[in-house]
Image 1 (cartoon, rainbow, N blue to C red):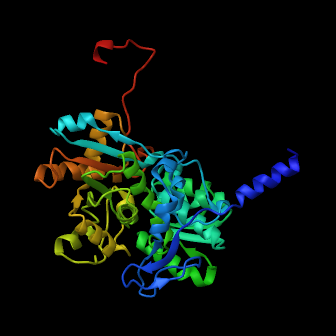
Image 2 (image 1 turned 30 degrees about the vertical axis):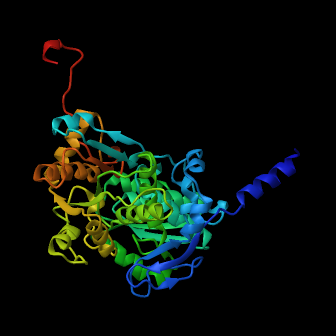
Image 3 (image 1 turned 90 degrees about the vertical axis):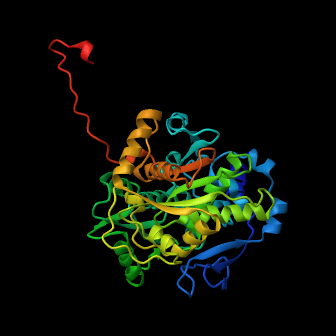
Length: 422
């Protein structure tokens, strides 16, 4: 084949259409329909938009066998996703994240007949589950002709937007609370975004993004303020079901800030049932928050559908320090429909859980992931979860991104060493 013909063939493959089954977009509160293939933020009711598919057509086009033969990470689920052209797929080498069992912790807790599995999202590009949502949001921004994206972040989402934005050739601007871990801020900047520290919390950063749209022309990629981050996070549910042989666990513990992943997984299970790949059984969805910022827990316990702003939010688990969530009612609906619950854990329990799992299993969880283990222990103790149930805990990022206790023990190689004391 000549060099020119080879280049033409490569261009044709790069330019090819991807089978997509998007029917329309829909307001999550009112059901009002919106046309697909256009730029959208929130609905006219000020609520998140959900992507709806022609599931009958999707069922005819996709099969478990074809899917099993594909390589790669969440882009394997292309029939379930909204990107229409291969040239707009933005990839950084995604993988299917592993389910890691915690057998020693199970033995310590007297878990018999059940299983503790951790879905380790830290293996994704940029080291967190934010890669899923932001890869899809950036890909759709590229497909829809957007050139400048902005968002508030507690760290990992900004890093993912910066990386995928740079990969796609888009401009990105990120705003972080002052106390965002230094490694996150450096990561965001190194991966191509303009990043600014803000003397406030993530909702204060979000206000700057919203108020700056008219002057800057950037598009607001905040959690649930556009339709496609949910579609990326949805792949956690697709992937989990596939890993479990097209079944679901008994309980999912999910670290919940904005809640996109919990909402996305609940959507994934509904779509999988609609095409006949799983049955009607659902996992109980557990929204895990920190006691210093627990608006969803407060609303759940009060029987409310919306969560008021949480004042003076604080926790060592910065990723779930979200004082107000635009999709609060979607989180609460999924939790209640599944027969699940919302639970808050103290910072002391989070750090103890991180240290315990690291020392006993050699598995370093991020603080938000450790919160799910602390919540599981608490729920096991109070009877909300049984010892014979299979549970999945979401470790949303690599623990290597977060501050760790200092090590002070030293040896003087020039003097006598008391080996018996080592």
